[in-house]
Image 1: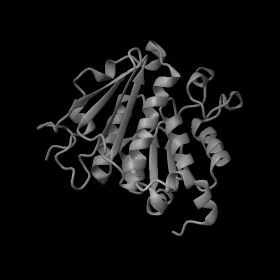
Image 2: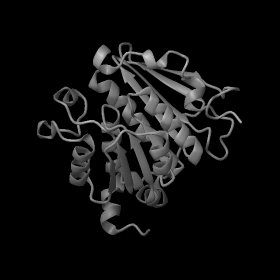
Image 3: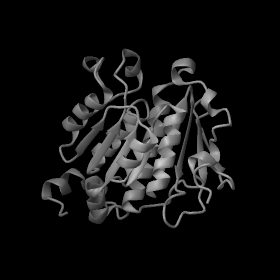
Image 4: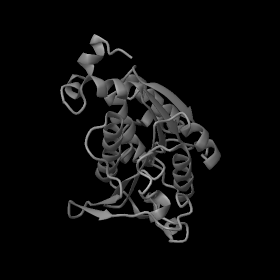
Length: 254
């Protein structure tokens, strides 16, 4: 793919950085990214990646826009209430960047459907709020050998990690299930409807997920693999916890 003069102007503030340059921008324009969930985390992810010029966004969500979403899901407007989030997200992207190709999957995701989708993707961004969906995404990403960029947020707190266990060269890395196993009580954790959530928290975590994605595609910097990054909004602090591969993991153990 050859970058046009219009694209060079559009992405000039990215291309000027030596870590990105024209090769990195070409990689972005050629990339295929799957976003699992178009809610509080998915919204900043979609906005950041569409603006950066990711070539194809595959958006998976089975929900509709609700009025209660608008305090933090900024890609939607009052006129979108009642619409499928996938369709409303498409409208937003089309208004922002015509370079982006969009594929919509307005359905409940299973391991089988995600495995098929990710066979044509370079990376998975997990922006879901359902444990079973997250686990299905983790398995599908591992099967397809692509990065799984995880984010979570509730109340004033957020977390983010890049799970690379299925990626060539990262075989010793942890996967999602190494940290969040089905028997660890994670499924009983309160969700945003029960515990609440603030927009700046989802914006911070979703933006970090988008940054990890851009870094992976352009080969810039170091990914947050084998680390769980925790954000405490009440203190404004970040903590990085070292993670490791679990010997008897249900997903990535040989």
